[in-house]
Image 1 (tube, rainbow, N blue to C red):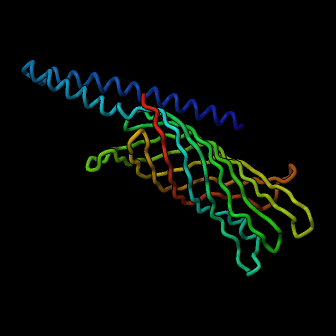
Image 2: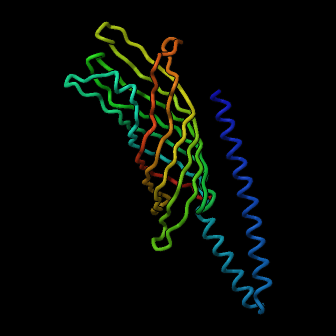
Length: 252
């Protein structure tokens, strides 16, 4: 099942690149035809052709392979996990998660990029009345597509929107359940999606930084323990997030 999802993501990304390439070639041919028809003097045609070529080069100069390191704060739901645990003061634990990850891919030009990434995120490990230790850990493998637009008033500053599609695996690790000495893991996995909007700023020496916010969709509805479904229980990691990242670009 997981391999099928990864293969589907790869096919979608290849199809996206093909469509973008066809569109780019068509746009370039159309620009050259318009210049040849509309300009009456050969000198003007040469000048404007040069300007168009320079503009194309400026857009393509963003083309690069990139390596990203990121961190996120995820304000997940985890309502079932919270409600089953009670802290010594009578409250429920926090369901917020911290995430760390890496991503790599291709910046096609200043408008589009594609890539793939992996993230690990987790709640704080807590001691509750029911257990001496409880923590939710999750992994997220995904493919990503980004659309960007430059902000002309600020050089090297871009606004973007990301769509990430992948698979999440969540585990609740329980230690010394009801102080009986029993420890176990409840696990489950599902498809997950993330929408992010934000800003990217290019620094010197091939570096760029990113800040964004968005929403993560990832509810694990079927959680199992020793092959048996845990009744009336889910690990719902859906929630708003904030994200920061640093990229290193290998210019093409």
